[in-house]
Image 1 (cartoon, rainbow, N blue to C red):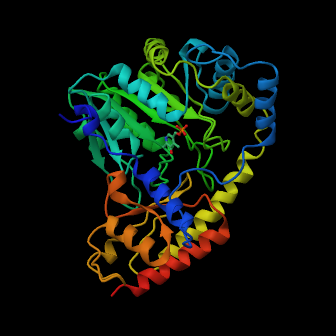
Image 2: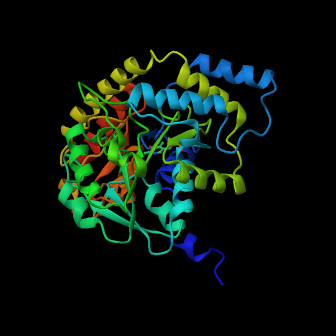
Length: 399
Ligand SMILES: *Cc1c(COP(=O)(O)O)cnc(C)c1O
């Protein structure tokens, strides 16, 4: 008999975490490795947020809390949704979980029955299809195309069946950086209005990382008629460099929020009390570092896009947001690496690049769309310049 349940056997470990772990391991062996695999900001959590956590510890805020979040944090989240997204949620419509990832998991395990389908545009964040499968549902990918990597309304229409329970939208996207304009969301909303059985989970983790004059919108704001079946998910991990603190949240219809709290009550209980107080400060304190920070990421995007497009055989679209690019390696398939191996896939490309030049990236198959790879540019300009030069050298060396 297999140790793993049938549901777990359908799931793969996170490829991004595996790539990052491999890079750390090689580094520990003394190899000169630049990892562009990790999906987290490279700046430190701001001091005002750290201070709030230290205060919480000193004040004894170290016990169990409400299962799905302290009232102070729910109030801060309601204020955030009103201020930044024009969305009116009451505290009873807010879920707080130990990270954005658990918010999604709680929503899926709370609602999916075997045979229920979840539509997920590819390339997608690695965890969506696996969480859906683990919760007993069936992921249905929609293949988008470079350079936009955005799902078109007719593709969405074609993917919806009577069994479709959810659509998962992620804008700006991890891994492509693509972000939907208001008009593009409007067009998707028109399709969704025709299918009342479909709920929408919108993952807005990167809302503050948009570039140029791009204006961020979330779908419940664009089409208020979808508010009653939309879970608007967000978190402090990326915007405030708080990945290790584990706080994610969502606003949605009260019955769904209640169901998610029921899951938490029997599994994780509350998110870390200290982190919740830190998140209150993150959402309510000074926000002035967010814009300059986005500008820094925009500079890095421009650097990486320009250097990658100078590499032989690579085509790199210019994304609207997040801190990722998703270049194509189509032009390198069939070429021979220095090791003698022929590059037959994006996975081969990533393996040979790490071997030959010590640059760690994540291959596109992990995100459901090949032949591409993902670079996280949340690292210093010096690191990025060095890594991109190595990629250029690697591509030039392919025979
Ligand atoms: C990082 C990330 C999350 C969640 O992060 P947590 O660390 O669990 O808060 C969710 N969605 C996307 C697309 C992400 O990149």
